[in-house]
Image (cartoon, rainbow, N blue to C red):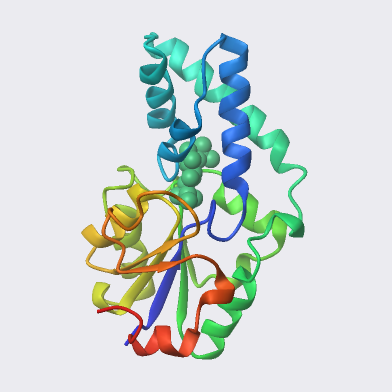
Length: 220
Ligand code: G16
Ligand code: MG
């Protein structure tokens, strides 16, 4: 049985994944670089600096450490201006209801986000109190697909990995959940979640039968 569910933030609870994309696209426009759609998916769950490196590599350009710092900072400034417009309309439909339903059944709720802005987003939406524990980009030293963010979340919740499930929209996040020994739920339309080894694919919250999910009958 599942005793805790850890949610990724961007793309699972809030559509801030689109704001991250917008920030990177604007940086690419500044620099005269391309920002292809397939790169956008690769940045899901990946830290700010690693995201920048993926963009540099895909454009075949190099930069000094100082230049990278400045560009990553600039993207984050763009992202933070977009965050000012985040309101309830940016919530993934059904996410809050799903969390409330889980809580009602006594399931502990964690946040496992690579983002250093994660708490700002939760506070801005007033949904901080829905999470018993939050692990964010400020708490971790290794990025998804490393399991650190989820392992730490499970520890803080006091629940062993095999009794934790993780909701993730990122290939790197599904890999991280699997590496943590947790049930991995690939959420949403991202390509490759199945091949990444998700235990269960959930296209949207309306699809999810919470009782069947908690009973463990939805996956083999
Ligand atoms: C998120 C996004 C990534 C972003 C990362 C770091 O992770 O999916 O695209 O690069 O956080 O964010 P920041 O620059 O705000 O620290 P998650 O794990 O919530 O999907
Ligand atoms: Mg995500």
